[in-house]
Structures are given as C-alpha cells and as structure tokens.
Image 1 (cartoon, one colour):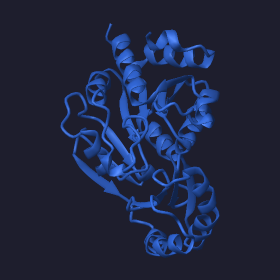
Image 2 (tube, helix red, strand yellow):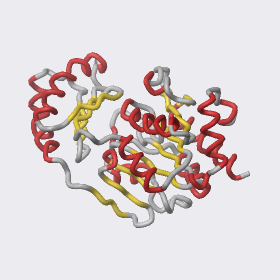
Image 3 (cartoon, helix red, strand yellow):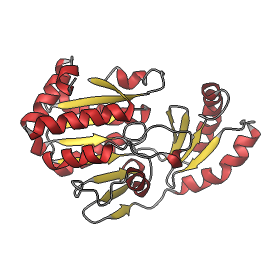
Image 4 (cartoon, one colour):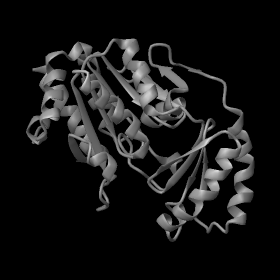
Amino acid sequence: MGIAEQLTSPAGRDGLAGLLADPRAAVVGLDFDGTLAPIVADPEQARAHPGVVPALGALAPLVGAVVIVTGRPAATAVAHGGFAGAPGLEHLTVLGHYGAERWDAATGTVTAAPPPPGVAAVRAALPGLLADLGAPAGTFVEDKERAVAVHTRRAPDPDGLLARLSGPLGELAGRHGLVVEPGRMVLELRPPGVDKGVALRGFLAEKAAGPVLFAGDDLGDLAAYAEVARRREAGLPGLLVCSGPVTGEPPVAALADRADLVVAGPAGVVDVLDSLAELLGR
C-alpha cells in the first residue's frame, strides 16, 4: 500500500498534496536513530537501514532539500548512515547535536559552535554519581561530545531505573546549566534552548521552504513536530511520520498521537521515502 492510501487525516492528505504539488520547495526532514537506523543496545553499532541511502538518493533530487536532524555528532551520523559520497545525496545536510553542528555534503565538512562548558563537568561527575546511586550493571553512558546520555536499555528494569535516575540527573544537569531530555530508556543531559524544532526552523527559513515532511521516533522529535504544526497553522502543508518500534512495543504515544502516519521502524520509513520518490517521478 502506498503512502497516499495510508493517510486518513485531512491534515496528512493536505500535507502530501502540497508536497506533490510543489516538490522543488519541499523539505524532507528526518531523525536518525530509530527512524533511519534501528535502535540497538550499543548506539555505536547503529547503522542506517540498508534501504535508506538508495531511497534518499532517489528522492533527494526530486525535492528542494533533505536534512537529517539528530542529537548525535554530525560526523557520526554521516559515517553511520553511509551518506558521504552517495549518489543523489550531493546536497544532503546533517544537523548534528540538535543543530549545533552542521555537515554539508557539498563541502564534506562539519561546522560547529564552541562546546558548552557544562558538558565537561557533567561528564566528569556522572561515573561517581551513578555509583553512589547504585546504578546496576547494564547502565551505560554515551558521550555525545556536546551532550551526555545515560542509557538504561541493558539494565534489568530499564523503565524503573530511568525513573529512579531522573531526579538526581536533573539536579546534576541544573548545577551545570544543562537540562535533561528524556527518551526511550535514555536520559540526555544537554544545553538548554537547543532542540530539533529550533534546528529545523532555521534550516527551513534558510531554504525558504514550502511543504515539509518530518519523520521521527522519540520524545526528542516532538519539537520538530511542533515546528511543522506551527507552519500548518500558518497555512503551509506539513506531513508528520512516526517511526514505531518493530519489537511489539507500542510507538511513543506523544508522537503517534500527533502523526499523520505511523510506520514500523526504519523499514517503514524507507517505504515512505520510496513511495514519495515514485509519486514524484511519474
């Protein structure tokens, strides 16, 4: 079933119609982990679904721009996605660290703002704090350079541990001028005022964008969803896609409730991209 047949909401149908009517002004925005790459126990082992690069390579030349907006370092997303030098992706942009870093395929370089000092202090304090809290084996820290994430996915009771760590990690973040962003079995400590909505808004303004599609899978993508919703209120078409888990878990309700289309993980997102390319290529 193609994307057009799966859309039931009027806003979703309008978003697709707007994208098909004016593809050269359209922007396709995508999260990385959970949307283009399956969620895995070790984030360093995450790689884009094998269908992602061919699908984006077919779609990108048909639309105004494709941008990946991620909490990861931009260079990491590029490497794990296999985007550098890929045919059709000569104008791809990756906004890493929620927009603090930018990689453009045209130059192959990363530009970045200075790292916030609070991250280094939190990075140094986290091991001792987790030990004091009795965090069990399976709790692990991911260093994102401009943010630090504490994952509970490998722990015996990941959701219970997440709830137990939330308060102390929030206090630690606050002491160093950071905030805590919750996600699926992860708490990320990062600078305030930086999110995917801000990053997406700046990119869309730069491109003088019209219709927008954004696909995400977790709470960190809500800000980008909100930016698309804001544009809808101003009369600009938008299409929201939720990448749900493929393990039998329900999708993140806050995203699924706002999405025009919920698909089964990165493979489902690839199907959406392929369907769009087919519709635009006719």
